[in-house]
Image 1 (cartoon, helix red, strand yellow):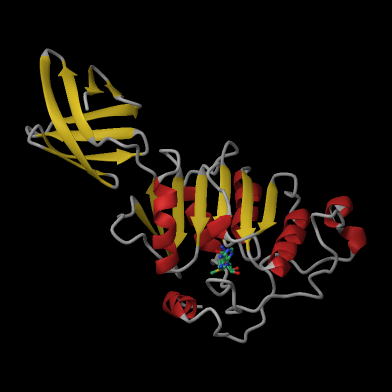
Image 2: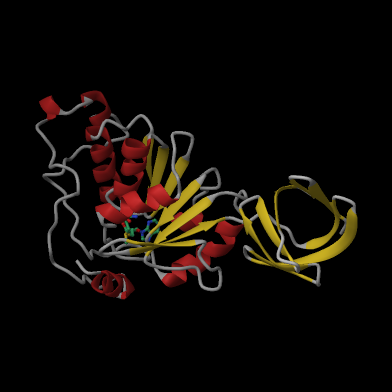
Length: 284
Ligand SMILES: C[S@@+](CC[C@H](N)C(=O)[O-])C[C@H]1O[C@@H](n2cnc3c(N)ncnc32)[C@H](O)[C@@H]1O
């Protein structure tokens, strides 16, 4: 399916069934129970009865706030690659559908992952797929509303929703721990410019790193040079009252360009910025 068509599908009202194509889950159809890799997991209370033979979602089927359309495999891998997901991450997919992003995070990147999905049939489908993929020990799914769920422990958040839903989530995402990575399929965050844009043959994604708060007046000490400067912050972008040409936060990493072109790089922790041979203290 082409990206424009996907976007068109998603911008259709959630009640509209935009496509009748019945698709297979992106994972193999359920094998007979005897050949399941982990029968006990597949039959545990976490995996409700019923099998893929009884429930297959249809692309474009209604969802609570947005229809179900799966992210293409190539973009799933690209999104998790750009976010540099490792085994130390906890990836949360908001509106996890058939579970493919969370399962890929667990299987291809070794991460712990969690999907939040409103449709209980999709949750059950995703749990069966995770069991078949052999990652049910580190990839979980919960039935719930993303707007009523706490996902603040995530180190990486993925989403494929709608522009207005992204904007509704934006303040929640910006309040997450600095350094949290966010990757959205197809839709941006309005004025919060992406740190990177991801393009595959058939889809586009956007990547942000939650910026630390650098707003305020800072006392700089750079070699023998001491001065104060006010930093103003718009999302990850920084401007100053004269000392710096521009600046940027990438999580807790700060880059400031002096008016003479020299670049300062440092790490912001609380009210201190520490760089190689320079530092700054927030004074208000
Ligand atoms: C476009 S699909 C994306 C599925 C998956 N994240 C992916 O990229 O393949 C959006 C999913 O969000 C789910 N959804 C819609 N509104 C939701 C809500 N308020 N809370 C949780 N899930 C929701 C839909 O049921 C659907 O499965």
